[in-house]
Image 1 (spheres, rainbow, N blue to C red):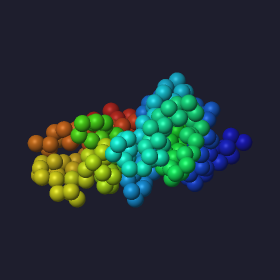
Image 2 (image 1 turned 90 degrees about the vertical axis):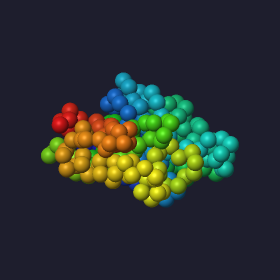
Image 3 (image 1 turned 60 degrees about the horizontal axis):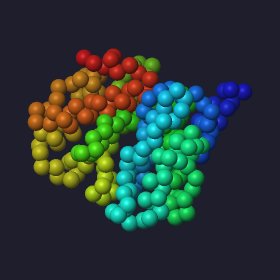
Length: 234
């Protein structure tokens, strides 16, 4: 019966059903990232868990501040998300008229994060974040082979044109970023992490902050995958 329930939970997650399915599950402690691709800007949420309780919820992207984001319902959904998720403790936030799509995406992303935290997620792709509220968060998509204890692929998740309040660092090559060193780090650090199977590869001179940020984000992804980051310190 337990196996059947687990299969049902995974199936519900895959079709984007409410995160209510995870209410009552046992969660690991930590910061868990849920991610939903969206042509208007990827939806990324951070769900923090401690002692089987959701203790923090944050939308990392896209940011919709009052006074700059033009749709009031979108701002309302964005602002209500943290308190709604904490109050619901896994049941998801209620719909908001005029912001149905946003709320559904937030709940899908939350469901993915809780699936990781509860051990219900059987995928091999995890997202890691290194937070920088001044310059923009770094987000990476990491594909792993847990049986082989191997990093298969690392991809920097670029911003997707959600405006000046975008929280993630811009897609440097596409936006014509002026610093060559930063472009080199953007293009080369992910490949070096995979090649060397290390989250301590050499930084690019002149782009130390960016280089280290990419490695920290990969470390966060490995932690969520249940892999020991110390195995990748070389």
